[in-house]
Amino acid sequence: MFLVDNEITLRLVFFFGIFLLMAAWEAGAPRRRLNVPKGLRWRNNLALVVINSILLRLLFPAASVGVAIYISQQGWGLFNAYPMPQVLSVALSVVLLDCAIYLQHVMFHAVPLLWRIHRVHHADLDYDVTTGLRFHPLEIVLSMLIKFAAISLLGAPVAAVIIFEILLNGSSMFNHGNVSLPAKIDRYLRWFLVTPDMHRVHHSVEYDESNSNFGFSLSWWDRLFGTYKKQPRAGHLGMTIGLAEFRDNRLAVNLPGMLRLPFTGAAVSPAINRKRTEDHE
Image 1 (cartoon, rainbow, N blue to C red):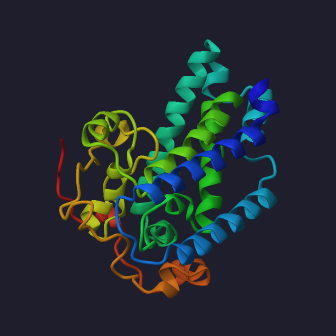
Image 2 (cartoon, helix red, strand yellow):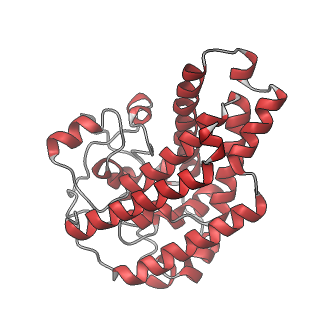
């Protein structure tokens, strides 16, 4: 199969292609002025990406595609137990895996221990394409294990897993972009996809705003589960990005600080339990 035979090449082409496209878009038409020098943030955020990539390759050489192949060979999971046309099983698997990532994201806000790990992503003092790649190694490992479980339960076809991985990675870079879309296009797109303006609300310093818009690819889940917020109260140019308790570059920006951030500071109430102001379109 073309997708399986060329998985690594496809993923690298889409990763670097989307990254360079978003970086060029941000350079040419940034949505917000950055507070921290881009070179400093990018060096540290991308260094974290390198660490995570090496760690995943060492711990899970076959990664999610290998799990999907094994599950298919064993005949495990929903779509192996109840066969259907491949196009349909692939499409449903991609949608359901996206739902699983939404639920995982909510869980990382709801459980105090997981929130400690996930707040590395939220502590970034600015918001751009590299924010979409900035996750603590512990979160990367836990996310991969959750993904393995979801693939196994669904019996997701190998093609679906490859498509999903490309979409998830690409959409994370897109919706974390420091870019804006024309209001009419944004309003239309966010009925289906998570746009940069939609997800930026989730990175607000205000907990009731960061407790919304959890989706990465499909925007349906936030609307369906009541976690959708249209706009930040201060507006996209006036809102503050990051976490109120971590405003120091030594923790929020520098790599050593990011790595120790989950183990720093007193435990706080998880963001999901903070009072949220309803704001629906």
